[in-house]
Image (tube, rainbow over all chains, first blue to last red; front, side, top):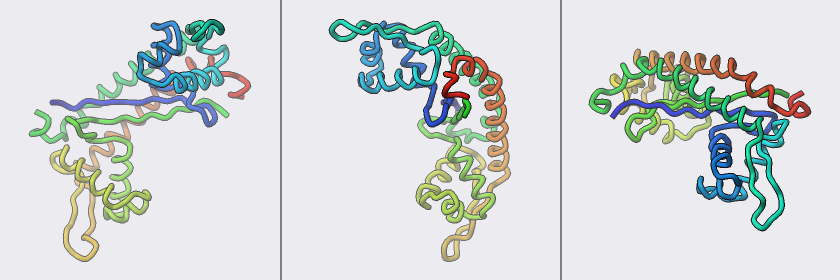
Length: 119
Length: 119
């Protein structure tokens, strides 16, 4: 057993959460699955919730992060735009940079942690 | 209107959240108010919730972060131990370091944000 961290970074624009861990996870799933509905299934999220997250992102960013092909029964799939890929990559990089800073600060906490729990 | 970030860092030890933004806020309030009950009032938190957060912290750290003086009607006050002051300072420093990293990464997101919303 040991001390470990979690961190949640969010970007806010006006009253909207423009980007954060949930939206990053959804974008990665859309990239991998090719549609909002299959991405939602993969993440065990309702289609409605996934659609609302995409709608918020597309309202906050220009060009939009997700391009949907309409038409066909069940919709025509969705994919990340170049902007979508760039924002997702920037968020992954930011999370990695932040994790490195937190890990560098870990000894300041670890030295105070109860040893009988921590060992 | 502009892009801004929020971030929540948490330290986990086994199944417990050993430390995070809520516990840091509570420690600062106990330091300033001199008792768990008045700290809870200041933060608009129930005494029971504040007490449980202190109990979790004191279970995860050794020596404990909060020293309570028992006795007297309404309890005898509480203060941060040296360990409590050190952990709170380490968390504040960590939050400042992380905020600097996130601010340094902000242009990667800002360039993609919708201008009619952002300006």
